[in-house]
Image 1: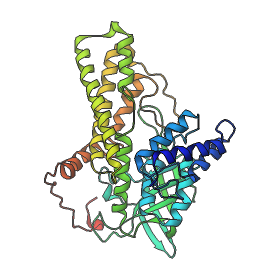
Image 2 (image 1 turned 180 degrees about the vertical axis):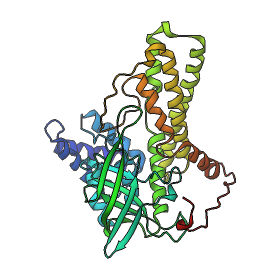
Image 3 (image 1 turned 45 degrees about the vertical axis):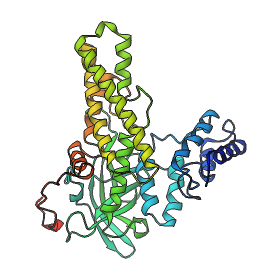
Image 4 (image 1 turned 60 degrees about the horizontal axis):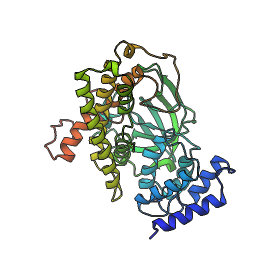
Length: 393
């Protein structure tokens, strides 16, 4: 089995053969992938060496010390955190070879075509249709809340392939080329003024069956891998102490004593402790991943992430008083990445409102935690055995 010493040796060999100071950034990343040092726990030939996931930190530390470039993970987070583990788990060998390398090095941005305006929080009620025509599927429908669709080359997509069975069945999972005819991306301007999200219209888009992930009709099961990894990547991000939303308000508290009150002090202390508990819980969750696939604990982490961000950003606006009502720039723009803590307090306050919607609404996640973590009885579902085509819409 690959150990830490061997990984350090392999990393030093990579650095010697491709010195970061003189090697093109993309060439270095490709060489790192080919050396198995991208995801060390992935199989050989797919960016890894079949090593324990915990040893990735050994490689990352060596490369950071040497000034090696990274793959800008925030820009390609959907590909890294959601598409890659799903392709690894359900893709064919050809799909893994074709998609994982350009995904990891950042040559190709990915987006997620899951949510729909007609399905609301009930993702399984989706209505986008995919109809088989020979070796292709013809897809028609609309998706919404699609981060980075304006930048993406590829998308992970779920569509209904059989309307005659209950809603959780009859769904199939595809990889969609965002440059294909019939794919239209329109910006969705948010309360922040930005349009990091999009709505995507699919009109007679032809997807080859070779770009199907998993079996026909088994898309809901495949999608669960994507969703669990999404919630872990949102709620379980690795951050330092006072990283994330608690950082800016803590700095303001230290630097602006004239703004302090007893009440605000008590609230800040409570939220600081909760943020630290969430950070350490995220670390524990990542350690659990070493032993297997992500579980539903990620839903709890994502719940806490949304609540804390909203409470902390609200406290920051109150702390700043009149200054907290200011907003730096309402200019419409389509950013390449999302920075929850970027810009000013007004931006942080407004942007955090989306945290309880994106990546699974807090209401849905509360049900998941109740049923699948705590083992409480599930809510009655009258549509469980009703064919999708017979549902009231």
